[in-house]
Length: 365
Image 1 (spheres, rainbow, N blue to C red):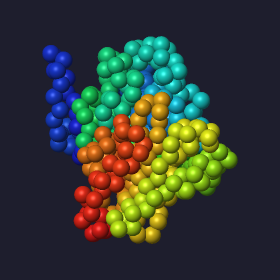
Image 2 (image 1 turned 135 degrees about the vertical axis):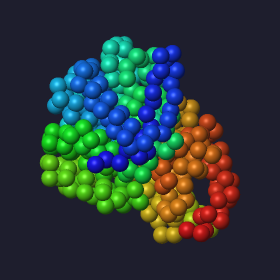
Image 3 (image 1 turned 90 degrees about the vertical axis):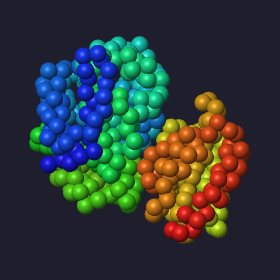
Image 4 (image 1 turned 30 degrees about the vertical axis):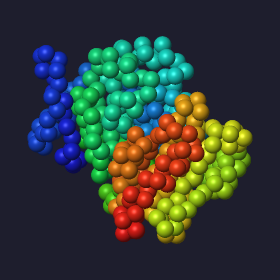
């Protein structure tokens, strides 16, 4: 039985205004019945991940895509922008439409959709340039996400920030719909990939005994764990390996505050033939240093005029709070992202100034 205790349901009244209420379990069960009823009638379904989709976003979308197709629906995954090369072996990845490349085709599909699933994000602005077309849609929205503080745009919201990943939630969602027997090796592979990448290969605090039980079932259902691990982590291009060398050369450590960070300029990215996803996991090298409990990476993105930031931490230091307070971001307790409109140099200066405010917290870990 899935615990939907954190689920919130959006109820539409006749005037088309919405109200969010926390519901007792019996009403949550009613929502599942409503979703099941919607799925029994609807045929045109669109699935959307967040902008800059990662392994959990793409894995959950493709897993749900395969599951709904198994049930006879017409389904399309539409990503706001492209996803990393190291995910482009996942079953069904070639069927994903990239909104920024095929705007009119994607708009038409969203306009015609009867149901829109939004996966691995809980605020519509995380959909990038797709926000306006999604806002204008008359489809029924179903959100599945594990980030804290969900907004209220969806008709049905399955939100649980204690979950390791959205992929684990999609597994439980499928279970709730009595669909575990429909999980194919392709679905198992997609779900395994998302759980593995969002838990740092099962080392983050969000990895629970329940996570391992789900993983065991996915392996039984055909996920090849060794092959997936190799395809995600052990297949570096030469340019990506050289970029990692530059990143490590740029690594700076503040031993006094148990902090480490990496900077990468646009020039350094260009010199090493940067492709989307090449810096995935680089921030973890700083966190792996002995004595370090807080790590960051600052990556210049001149096309957007911003510095993209990833934060990681150990213990109880909340990078979610840190990112929200100072860098227009957020995420989870130990993994979050943000951005800066300052130059790379000034962003670094700002960061070094701010971390002194957290001296007591950092030294207590």
